[in-house]
Length: 396
Image (cartoon, rainbow, N blue to C red; front, side):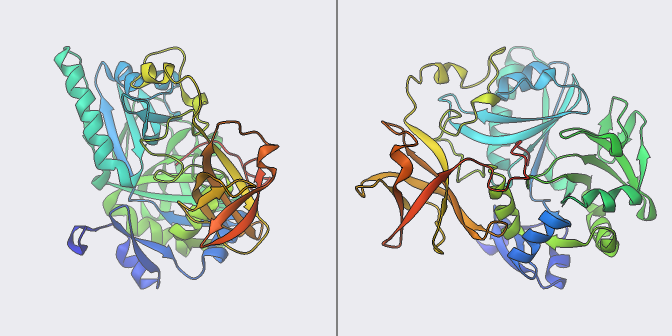
């Protein structure tokens, strides 16, 4: 991808003004950090942080057959959730490999929106369009649209995030339009939202109407805020101007990754890809027994797990990295690193890895090593998450 093909979120100029370290990620110029990954990480754990996640993709699914369509495309029981609720789900290919992991918002039986990983937006949309064409050949009423470029998306995360959001909003609890979305249900007050629910509010002083969900990618209490793209700069600056309410700091992709990994949340391209199935990744609880979905038949034919995902910590200072080898006590290769990083909350290196499932048990894994540039670092299997106060419920 050349520089002319790399996209910018509506906040690119704001990040540059703030002196952020800018990198290319998933086809976008994005902030890696503003001052310090560790400082930003710890502030989210203690106070609150604001993230630009406008690079994420949004795909709408509408029509009188939308419910049967989402139940076929996604592995979870999407149609069974209530309007105003969200569900985490997977998209599988016909062989059972993971195309993406997503969150799906339900507005009514006739309307849903899937929030997808930035790196997979075009792939996901092409796949969903392919399935739509098959449905339409059968006379089904389904329309899908990629509205990613129309949406600005901010995330405010951390235990004090409500101290920032609640004083600045006026609740909207009526049926009707909410920014770019059409609420066909009576939304809850934002203050009454439970995890994986969404509603509507207006940021009073700047008159920005937003769909706000109780969701995030950090393991902390937090919100994701959906607004028209042209309102993103105004709302970003407004929230930062009120940072004193919650000790708010801007947060880049570096801390977003360390935060998600302490919460043991998967990242596509690391813990997930099309060569990995839900059983490998330990995500079988997101597979519905009550309905058919793409890839379900292939999963039935998987007799034995070939590999499993484990989480570990290191006692040394070296950081494990993606694709490095896992070795058993005899220094025989048994797998590869999926993700590795330094845990700012724990002050030691942590990682995940896929290892061969043949004959593996916890006793077998008491002594294993990571090959870090020729140095064999001893590792210890741990149960996720890596931070005792975190929830591991999947959310992007």
